[in-house]
Length: 252
Image (cartoon, rainbow, N blue to C red; front, side, top):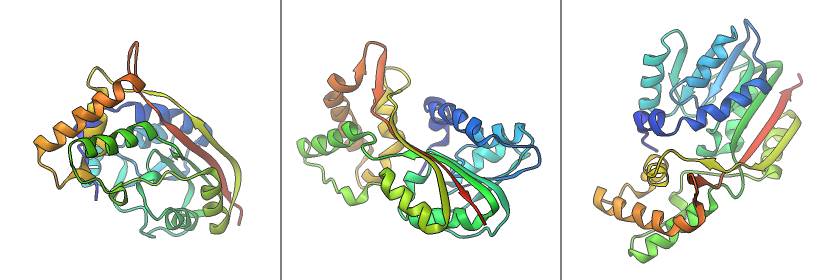
């Protein structure tokens, strides 16, 4: 289970929610619609949905994220839940998810749960990390681990970055009609000179939890050194993000 630092997330990784606003325009939430936000984080996008008059339920598997979301937006229903739990049945006009499903290992089950949560004609709009996402960072982590003689097990990585074909298969098997599916490169600027270090500290600490804080610091600094020639540009750090975005519908 990944342990999240909600303060670091809100302070140094606002780009996650900022990119999600474009996804909201695709969803086009309507007043009175019931919308489920899967992997809601600290609630910023759930709040944007509610501004359109939608009735939003957001859930996340991180207690720290949900606690922060409830504090920031007490008017919205936030619940602690894993995406692989099938808790909702035909309750929502739309399911929305931004930068969350790649943290859920059993994506086939997650997609089926989203289908079950929707009313007939309900839509499922989501974006997540796609194939090749942060490939440079992952290679640097592996190389840095070898250099420092630190055990590195790929099986402990918390992410699954699916291809278009894999996600399309999950959706159609669940019963969705897929209207649109796109896989695209989106270089993503990180905040400040410590951008890549903060990214590693935010998103990859969980699978190095067996290390001491000093060992993790050495690993992340070595990874930073290896990545500087590839990902550090004139105006700072830019992560090699690949995204998968889709629009699907439950027809009956």
